[in-house]
Image (cartoon, rainbow, N blue to C red; front, side, top):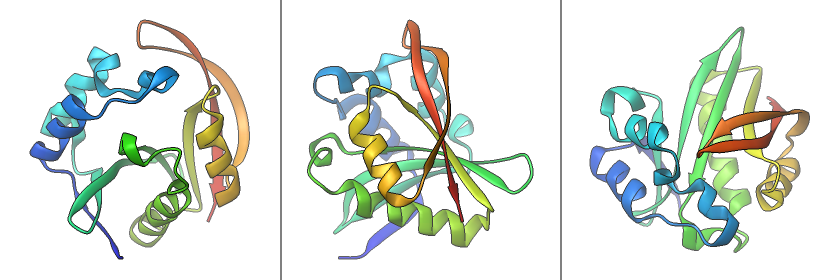
Length: 154
């Protein structure tokens, strides 16, 4: 079935923020794990015109944000519906996002950041053609965590 990408609605943002909860260490990605992120995600002005819903068969399966940054680079952040993670659906989900960003933003490179403990996501990114750039510590969710920057050349 075809994937449909549209701007994220307020109702979808609230569904993600209040109902999407990940198991175990992945609860790190629950929207309510960081109050600042939650407030920004729920504020239409905070999401701006760069946050998108990914749907399949009329079901919300994920979301992503796109931020054009210096030069011809876009930075993305993404989240997949919790019950779809770890089931082999990540590659198709990511490829639909990469296609959308490439067609609509025409970047030379796409970057993202991922917590280094999230080996499941890192494998998906590497398989899609991302390469590891560097690691750094980020204050979030009430502590400091190691993240990896990754780059995809379009």
